Structures are given as structure tokens and as C-alpha cells.
Amino acid sequence: MTLALEIKGLQAWYGESHILHDMNLSVAQGEVVTLLGRNGAGRTTTLRAIMGLTGRRSGSIKINGTETIALPTHRIAHFGVGYCPEERAIFSSLSAEENLMLPPTLTAGGMSVAEIYQMFPNLEERRSSQGTRLSGGEQQMLAVARILRTGAKLLLLDEISEGLAPVIVQALSRMISTLKAKGYTIVMVEQNFRFAAPLADRFYVIEHGHVVAQFNAAELSTKTDELNELLGV
Image (cartoon, rainbow, N blue to C red; front, side, top):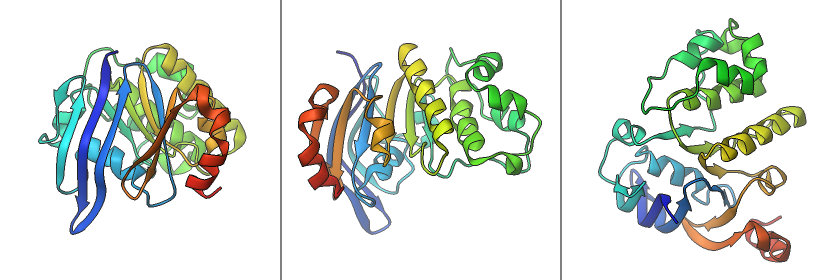
């Protein structure tokens, strides 16, 4: 098994606040893995720490076998990592297509604009619309599409289904299935378990900044009671 991401003993801080405590997880190439947990458990901080966007970090974060814990964010991105934050970060004064074209090509093999529009026909229809005029779902599609163009093959997706209409959530589900079939590796933070459950190969449950449980998709039906207890459902 070739690992796209391997985290060992990760500690992370925001200023004086110690958020991640001895975090350990791994993701194989081509896997879809979901990080579960209550709000404030450290799931988003895990994604941000992978990208070097927290404060102080220690431990080990290997991307495709290369240690990246001491590298700045722009160097980490060049290992083919794309981060889609919960806030989407769409530039409101730019058109949808200008937003799409803004990030540089980081590694070879990124999707062409034509391929992206085939996956997200809504964006092609709204290609000239300003960011502020896009719906929440269209902004989310654009935020994901932007990192696909860079050549990233390890995608870190933070709450991409949050607050969106069911038809958009279904479109995002199809997108993840398509990307998985193309060999992308995806780490998702999700509160919407119904969205994540049929997509993920494995699940990690995070509590107080470290992993407290992990299981694969085949075990899901036997873990309902444990999940309800851990997640407070």
C-alpha cells in the first residue's frame, strides 16, 4: 500500500492554544477518508496543519513519502496538495472563470477548463458572473474546481456540503465518486454523515485533538452505537 499521507505524533498550536495532541493517521493513494468529530474536535485544524496553516507544529507529516513538517505552505502545495477551506475564499470582484484561472499550475496533470466545465456545467453557464452573484452551491463548486486545475491529486475538503441544497450535495457526491475513479486521494471533514458515509473508504473519529476511533466502510453498520456516542448524535 502506497501512502499519499502519513501523520505521526502531530502536535499543532494556534498561538498558545494547543489544539492537536499526538495525531496519527494515514491515507493510501486513491482512498477517500472522512474525519468525523464534534465541532472543535480538531478536524479542520488537522487539514490546516497538513498545509502548514497553523502556528507551531511538531511531529511528522509525510506526503507521498516526503517529510513536510518544516516546509512553508507554498512548498507543501507543490507536492500536489489542494485545500478547499470551509469559507470557500471566492474573490467577489472576479468572474467565476477569473477565479478559476487565478491559481498557478503546481504540478502536471491538472484538469483543463473544458474538463472542469464538463464536471460542473453550472460553472460554465455562470463563467462571466461575479463571485458575489454565484449561489452558495456554485461558489462551493468553484472552490473545488479551482484546486483541480492546479494539478493537485491529494485534496483536503472542509465541510463542502454544509448549508447546501440537496441537489447540489448530490452533484458534489457525484464529483467525489468521479475523482476517486480517476485516482485522486481525498480527505474530507464532514458533519453531514449521510453525505460522507457512501463515499468514504475509511473513517477517523477525532476528539480533543487526537484520533479516538477508526473503522472502514465495511464496518459501518456495526459501529452505529459507538458513533452515536462519540459524535453525540
